Length: 109
Image (tube, rainbow, N blue to C red; front, side):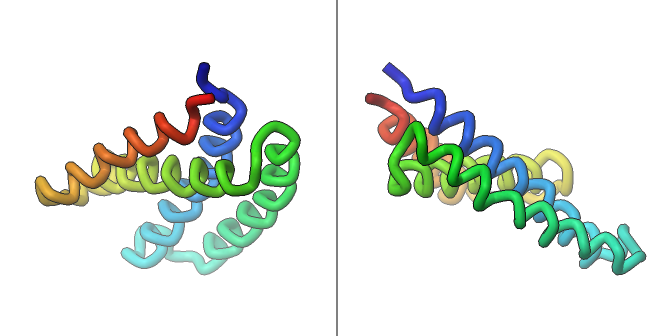
């Protein structure tokens, strides 16, 4: 049986990472010219302790941290690939694929 709480909270936390990374990348490229955009990442990141605290009612810190990290890696990589047009080598693509396997094992009860 899968623990959907760890996947759900991990995805929510990783979603914050994706938005922050996108804003920072676009600012670094000059797409977002105003420095006011750089206020949003720390404000969004300030929500993560509260989300993590809530998630600990359903899963251990160890599993939540690993789930968050892996889902964040997958989603940020997907955003960079599909939205920003960045590319990966075959070997790095295999590494991302193995992340799914790790997530499977972490989520299985």
